[in-house]
Amino acid sequence: MTRVRKVEMSKMRLEEQARYSKELAQVRDEMEGTWQKRLEALRQRESEFNEKLSKREADSEQQLYAHRQRMLSDMETVRRRDAESRRHAQEAQQHIARQVLKS
Image (cartoon, rainbow, N blue to C red; front, side):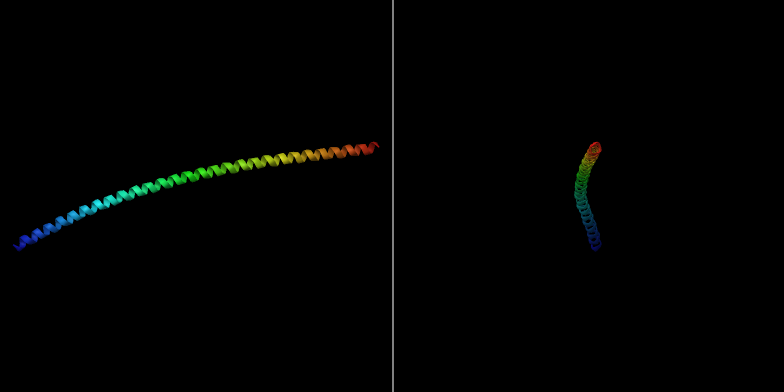
């Protein structure tokens, strides 16, 4: 009788252990699924953030380039005006010098 009880108890323990192992595997699978979804969501957010950052950097670079080009254009305009003013001043001095020599 005791041997039958021991066998039954062993069988019950094995069944219980199998049931808990199965339950644990299900919980583990559920948790892994949840973590996979969270990980994918985080990766998606990271990807979107990187895209936005790249776009902002590109926009900033374009704005800086446009600003540099405007500044170069303005500097060239100033140089031309300065050269023209000097030429006019030199012509005026030459004209005055000719007038003085004529008198």
